[in-house]
Structures are given as structure tokens and as C-alpha cells.
Length: 287
Image (cartoon, rainbow, N blue to C red; front, side, top):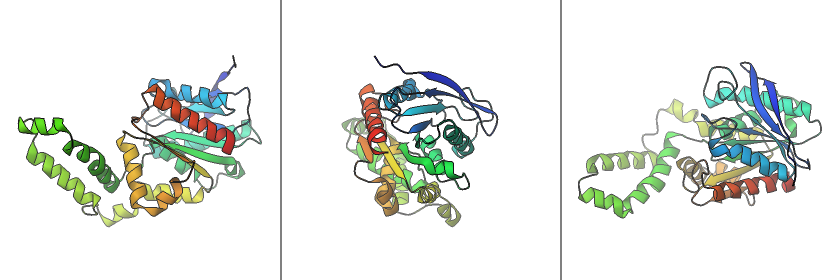
């Protein structure tokens, strides 16, 4: 039986010490990865998913650090937006670069942790150490804008609802507010088709645009894992369908995994095992 060592780690962050756990590998042939949780998750993740991921990575040669950003878990500080965690991610990556000279680096993020990872990987002025980041892995990344949300709602929620016998049964029994339902559907459809998309200023500074700009500065591998039953993942799918730049960046052979039926945090053990095995394989053989 292989032995995996874990060690508590303190990293100097934007608001004080950042608390994390480093898991080594008995066969350190892959990169050293930073695992970033999405808010309000901590380094453990829902149903200890990040601990399970760290074990799978270690089994294939990838060491990892799972970290609590400032204000979350055991790390002190004020809780902010996910953008506020970018300096902590940069600090953690520089820490790994110092502690593991010569090793390739990687970042794995879930939801808005994935979005923060994109912004950190594309950060300017971080020196030669950041050139060692060989890959980032995005698990159900947060790319929300009013339009992507509307497209995902129309394609997933409302389409399923109309085709659901239970919906029509409730409607006939008067348990569904028909006028309200139609109004909501019309509003989302109008936004999805390009109407009601906010002010011009908002259109110029959408989150997808900011993330794409950061990805333009990060020219290494981007791995993407998308759940089949998750609105956040559906918004990423909608973004790739509507924006060819996103499609070209993410929809690449052997660099995107879709897990049918999986929810946002892969609560089904089989779904999460599939994602963990795929990520550990990609890091061990293609990084």
C-alpha cells in the first residue's frame, strides 16, 4: 500500500497567514498543483472532495496544496469576492515555486475558484516563477453574465420544464402561476437572444471578457471539466456556443471532460472519481 504524506502549510497572504495542507507523492513525476475552492467552500470541499482529488493526484505523481484563501476556513481575514482571492493564489503559487524549484506548477479551481485561478494565471508582473505554470484546470468555472445565465436557463431549465409531465400536471391543477412563468420565460428568452443585456458599460466589462483577457496572457494548457446537470456548467457551455473565442480556447480534444448527470460538486462518488481520474491522468502524462 502506497504511503501519502500530508503536512500543514502556512503561506503569507494578503490579509495574514493562509492555512493549507500539502500532500506529497511517492512518485513525484507530475507538477505541483494548487487546489482552489469556490466560495463558500474550504480546502476540504463538499463531501471532502478536494482531499479525494489530492489522493488521486498523488497516486499519479502530482503533489498538491489545498488552501483556504483569506477569510475562509482556517485562514483569517475579511471575506471578499472571488476576485479578492487572486493575490492569495499568486502568493501560494510563488510559495510552491520556491519550495519546489525546477518542478512544473498547475492550478485546479472549482466554480469561482476556477475563475480566480484564471485571473491569477494571467496576472502580470509575477516574474519567471509564473512561467512554470504548465496548466490550469477549470471545474465548472463561474463565467456568469446576464446573457449566459439567460441562455443556460432557456436551454436547460425551461426546456426541461416544458417537457416535464409533472409541470403540466401541476399547471392543470392550478399549482403553477402560469402568467408569472410565461413572463419569466419571455424575459430570459429576450436576454438570451440579445435583448435587455444591460448598459453598454456593463457589456464592456463582463466577467467573460475579463476572464478571456486573462486567458490571452496565459498561453499554456487549459483543462476543463463540466457537469451535465449544473447551471454553472451550462452557462460555460452557452458561452462556448455563443463566443467562438471561448470555443477555440476550451473545446480541444483530450482537454475537456463532460460528466453526464453530475451536479455542481459531483456528489455522486462515481462522477467525482471519473473527474479525478481524468485530471490526474492529464497531469501525469501530458503536462
